[in-house]
Image (tube, rainbow, N blue to C red; front, side, top):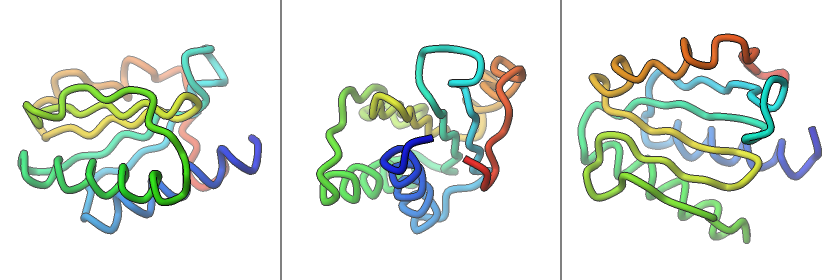
Amino acid sequence: MTEDVQRLVDLIKNAAENKKAEDLVVLHVGAVSIIADYFIIATGNTKLQVHAIADEIMEKTEEAGIPLLHKEGYDEGLWVLLDYGSVVVHIFQPEQRSFYNLERLWAHAPEAGNNY
């Protein structure tokens, strides 16, 4: 992983943790697909918390000069997707995370843990 991607993953993880995101997972999807290098998956218990996590991530990445390429689902607050190119962030409410179960869908992608 390049130093820039590592810095982005760290920045996003820290921002999500600052807003008490739960069940934070980093998947190295780049090992099995060209869609992105990493997926970061997190849970917020309410629409308000999902928004707070997404807002914190967008604020910190903007401060760092990292452009957000695409955002989806923000208004509904059930599943927010933030696309930074090499890193795609998925912030779910618990029911949606369980239903879509990206960890199962991408089970062939290794979990990065702290080894990204």
